[in-house]
Length: 534
Image (cartoon, rainbow, N blue to C red):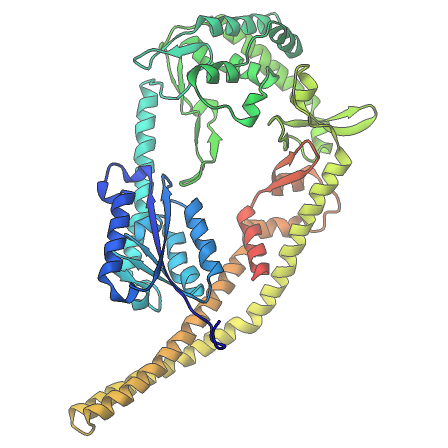
C-alpha cells in the first residue's frame, strides 16, 4: 500500500494439461501448449506487464478437476482475490472435458472470483461474454465432454473383445502361473504346488486356521508378496504386512483360472474420471476355456466349492439373528490391514474385532477390539447430526422459497419489461437520428445512456436467475431419495440395521479407534455443508 492506495497486481496464469486420452497428438504436448501461450502473450500488448505463473498437470484426465496443479492454481486465485487474474489455456479441452463442471467454472466460479478466462484456439475471451457462454461455445464444451466418454466406451469395447479371446493383459499373472514372452500363461510350479496343497486341505475339510498355520510354519509367502517381489511391483502399506488369511484361501478356492479358464471382466470402473471400481458378479464375468494348463482337477474344484457353498448357506442361517441386532453387519473395516471387522463376545465384552487378527495366528495387525456400544454410538451421533443439518436447512430453504421465489419472478418480469421498453426507446432514437432530428453526437450520447441502463438491468436479471437456480438446486436436494430417507428415519432413537443400510456405506476403524464413516448420498451431504459455509 502506498499513500493509502491499494496496489493491484496483474497475473497471467498459464494452465497446461496433457493426458493419455490425448494420444500421440504432438499439438497437445506440454511444450507446444507453453509455446502457444507464450506467443499469445507476446502478441497481446495488454498483457505485457502481467506476471506469468505456469501450472502444469501432465498425465491427468480432463474428465474431472481432481488434478494437483489445477487445485494449486485455484488456491492461488483465491489467495490473490482482488488482483487482476487472467487464466489462459490452449483451448477449452485443456481446462476440462467434463461438460457440466467446465461450464460451472466458466459461468459461476471464475466470474465469482473475478477471473478472466481465455481459450486461445477457441477464440474465447470471457470479457466478450459477460452473460455466460453462447450456444457455439456451449456446443464446443459438449463435444469435449463426449470425447472421453467415446474413448472410454471404445476402450471398454476393446477390453471386452480381448476378454472374449481369453487374452491376459494384467501386469501380474494369477498366482500359480507366470507369463511367457508371448504373454501367455505357463505353470509356475513353485506356486502351483501351494495351490494344489490348499485345495487338498480343503477337500479334506481342514479349517482355515489349520491351513494358515501350516503355510506360515513352512514359511510360504502369501500370493501378494510372492508375485509382487517377482514382477517388480511396489507393495502398498497393506500388502507389505500381507499374510495368509481366510480371504486369500477363499480367493484361490473359488478361482476358475486353475481349471484352465481365462477369467476376465471381473471389475469395472464405477464412472468416468474416477479410480473407483466395482466387482462384477461371477455369472457376468467372461470365461474362456482351455487357455492354459489346468493345475486343479474339475472334480476336486467342484467338491470343494460345493462344500464352501454349503458352509456359507449354513453360516447365513446362523447369522440371521445376529444380523438383526448387529446394526453395522458387514460395514465395519480395519484400516490397519484392510480386513473386515465382525461383532463378537470376548471376555464378556460386546466388541468388533478385526477378522484377520482374530482368525490368523500370524497376523501383524495391531488394531484392538472396539466396544460395540462405543462404535455404534459414534456412528449414530454422526448420522443424527447429518439428519439434523438436512432438516434445519430444509425448513430454512422452504421458508425462503415461499417468500422469495415468487417475488424474484415478479421482479424479473418487471425488469424484462423495462429492458423491452428501453430497447424500443433505442429504436425510436435511431429513427430520429436517421430522420436528422438528432445529431450524431446527441444520438450516440443518448444511445450510450440507454445501453448502460440495459446493462444494469441485465446484470440484475442475471443475479436473480442465479438466485432462482440456487434455490432450485437446493430444492432438488430436498426432494431427492435422500430427503425421503431422512423423513422416514428422522424419529429413530437408536442405530438399527435398516437405518444403517439406508445411509452408511462403510465404517473404517484405525488402530487408535479413530472412526471414519463413508456415507451414501455423500454428494447431497456435501452440498448442504457447502450451503452452510456460504
